[in-house]
Structure formats: C-alpha cells, structure tokens
Length: 172
Length: 354
Image (tube, rainbow over the protein chains, first blue to last red):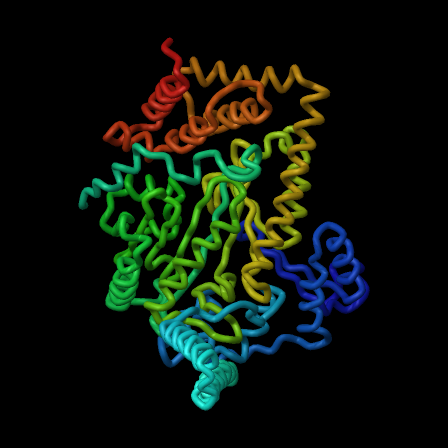
C-alpha cells in the first residue's frame, strides 16, 4: 500500500478515524506520519497515538485468525466481524489472537491503564489489612513485639497473595 | 402499557444539570460522564435471548436497588412504557436512543435530581451516567466512581487486567468511560471558525455532536465534545485531555465574543432583541427556529444585554421538544399543533401577556 500523503513510499502506519460514526482510513508512510504527528502535536499532542500505531504495524501486515469461536456464547470470529460487537465478555479471550491489533487500531493502544474493580473480595481484604495494621500499632504501643512481628508477617502474606493474584490473572 | 406516575412528576422539575450553575457556565451548559459495565460470562443484549436478558435484568436490578444513594430514585421498566414516555426520557438525556429501541427487559433508574441515571440492558449490561451543570467533569466522575464501586462489590464485573472493562463494542473497551461537555458557541459559529474547531477536535480523536444527542447535528450553536479513546489512558488522563481541549474552545469563544461585541455591537444586539421579540410574540414556531432563537437569547444573557434567568432558557430548550409538549398537553399532537403549542408555551414562560 502506498502512502496517502506523499504517494511514493510504502504506507506502514494505518490510522482509523471514527467521526460521527463515519469511518475514515488513512494510510501513511513513516515519514509522513511523523510530520502529521508533529503538526497535530503543535495543537494538542496526538503524536504518541501515531507512534503507537507505527509500533504496531511497522513493516508487517496484520494477520487475523478467522476460524475462532467463543465456547461460552457461540459467537464465531466471523460473526464478530459482521456484527461489530462481541457476544459476551469471554469472546475477548476466545479471539485473543486478534484482539490486541483490533484495540490498537481503535484506541492507539491495547494496554489497560487504570484500576481493577473494587470487588467484594477486594474490599474484604482491604478491611482485613486495615484491621491488622490497627492491631499492629496497638501491639507496638504495648511493646508486645512478638505479637507485632506475627501480625506484620500476616499482613505481608496477604499482600503477597494479592499481587500474585493480579499476576496470575495477567498470565491467564 | 403501564402508566408510570413518577415519570409525570419529572415534568414539573428541572434537572440539576440544567440549573445554569457551575464553572464557566457562560459557555458550558453541562458535563456528563458515562461508564460502560458488563457481567462476566453473560451474553450482551444484542447476542442474548430473552431468557438471558431477563437474567441480566434481575441481577442488575437487585444490585441497583440495594445501593443507598439510589434509594429515592425512580425505577423505570423502559420496555413497558408508551412511546411518548420513552421519548420524554430521551429528550431529558436520561436514557439513550439505543435503550428506547424495541426489546424486552430494558430498564433504568434515575436519581432524584436527575443527576445519576443507570441503564440496564443497553448495548452493555450497565451504562452509568452522571450529568452536572457547568464544567464539572471531575465531580461527575467522582459520583460515577462512587456508585461504580458500590456496584462492583455486588456484581461480578467483566474485567481483564490486559484490556480493562470488557464491553460489547471494542470502541468502549478499557475504562468504558465517555466524558463529554456541552458548549454554547454562538460566536464561533457567527465568525465561521467553528468548522476549523470541529475538524481539529476530530483529528485528536474527540467527537462533536449536537445538543439533542447521538446522531443529531449540532443545532442552535450547541456542541457536545467527547473522548473517543477509552483504552491506554487512565480515567484521569482521558478527562484531563478533554478538559484541555474544552478550555481551549471556551477561550476561543470568549475571545470571539469580546472582539465581535466590541467591533459590531449593533449587529449582535439587533440579533438578540429580534430573537427576543419573535419568541415573545410568535404564534407558530417549529423546533429548529425555537432552538436558534433561544440560543440567541442565551447569548444576550451571557453578554449582559438582557436580564433573564438562565434556568428559564434551559427549561425552554428542554420542554419545547415533541414528547415534552405532548406530555404537557396530555395527548398526541400533530406537527402543526405542536408548533402552535410551542409558541404558546414560550410566550407564557417569557412572561408576555399579549
């Protein structure tokens, strides 16, 4: 594919704009993309978005696996392409091979930045840790150091389990 | 069709987001944030049969009714409503177009002051919306988060550490956050700078829409700017970026007002007073004309040309819409009848006896 701006070099950056539901695609070579990025950055700072896109597609075609199917809701990848919406939350996992490039094309990134939901478990653990910390303080004030050490170990244990949980989910 | 008396009560109040208060309210009408949330494993509305839709409805309803903050809220079974009530809620920005489309087990809960509205079985299982008057995105997001946390502790949200909140449409994946600000930009329109502004905003992956929501063109100089990107940035970053853009637009509008009013005072005053005159005396008026004239009246108020309560103008912008007129009249009206009723109502509210 040839760059939409210079019409000479190979386009390696693919930009999709959705404006009022209308999808416009822009295919640029690296040089023109950088120029366009710099141009826009003067106004607000979209360059990082374009940079993200460049990372994604520099030199390689996006390969999609099409024979995928979500066992939870029955949606196939073909259905998804046709409808434009996932069938259920498990589809993301089922279509895992294609999801990152799709999200990158839409958002310029495929990595969630932000907090996890405050679930019951989250709140229970948080309350427990708070309570233990209070007890720890008390123990220190009363100079019951053996007890304090015990409580401290318990807090460490919980916090370790919590980070591991996070990691496990990530790896799944 | 069941009659929902609580909906009729809304007719006599003006939502908190239209009070004309808050930061930068000379240009900013209101701020809105919306969070998209789903239950893990249950199919999304478009992909579910009625049995699964009902399941979602019941699980979410139980959680919502359990939240202390929503104790005095109005629960509305949208699917059971007559069309006029559906459009009435749509006109008040309390539900989305998608929610009022045909289909079973759709519902929403609306908080007392119409600040919070939570839709059930929209495109996503849950759409939580907070509306505020003026430039108040930060307080809107605080409220949204508080309720979201309470819901998270009662529901099994669809969430992944890689991609965040998992939504039906990949354009919402991540934070599921859509933040938007409604601006009144008459002088950017008058000086023909608006096309430039809208184009620049679009290039930065922000969208511009009209006062009357998704899929509508901007009318009466009202524009709604919102973020497109929901992934790769935290909620704070999304809101901060939007605020940067909005601040810029506000200052452009103010500069244009100052400049044009200083250079061409007569033209502006003439436009404001002509509009005021028409609103006070006309006998037939379609929505488009009414919105444009009310926009001019608002400009007159913002420039200090005429003294009129901003709440009154906001209220008129709301109640001149078709479903509102028909609810007030208590019956279905033809276009012609609506145009007459609209003119009557405006004359009445602007205090003109003639």
